[in-house]
Length: 294
Image 1 (cartoon, rainbow, N blue to C red):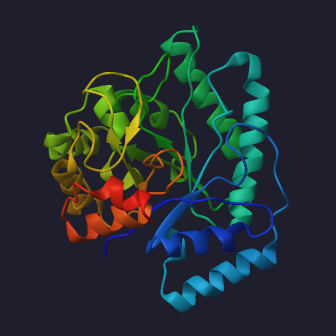
Image 2 (tube, helix red, strand yellow):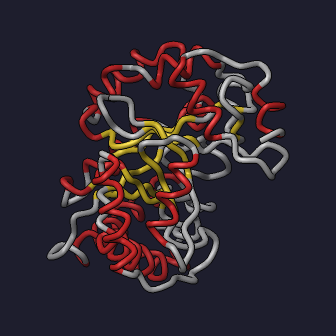
């Protein structure tokens, strides 16, 4: 089965239930959300009643609870020594929140070394992840998925080799994995028209079974631009057919495919229409105008 969904909202009043209801508007069968604003530390208490109500509704609809994903906030940067304790403490709290929500996977940007150099940055990520996973080892059902990054600025996780180095040095490898991002892969220099070659190398170095999610985004940038600017499906440099081949690649199994494409005119969510295109495997040149009329 194809599990296709998008990023959705999460607010203190409706929480998981509100996220589910938004996903249903898009005809999605999986979704991803942040447990609070990705740019700050403000967090609401998790209401078990709303979580259970969402779970009950998903069961009624035949939706797989394990295909729901949470994204960790951007303010966490395990590379940065000045904020290292903050990042490890806050990430520990996020893992605990995600665990309480009953979500299996949490996507994390590995971090940016901000001038420290790649070696120190990578070792800081390893140190931080080992601390976090040790903090929650007695009550953790969450797997942290390191996201493939575009290499913007001093971002790490831009190559399979960097991700391999991190994972090889994690003590609890059972709770660590990878989230692919098509825009980031393109911008990092990977040719997605040769996606099976990418997977061959990934399987050799890390193992395909470690891939827990894939973010589906077109890119505004040419390959190897190291810029990370998402575009709507079929309207960027990667192209619709290439993305369809990635989405339907059988080697990815039934992991969730999550859209993070931009709102049209910063106002209109495109996800319902992009999901429809993906399911039909047919590109709609009039998609943007259709979205504006919704």
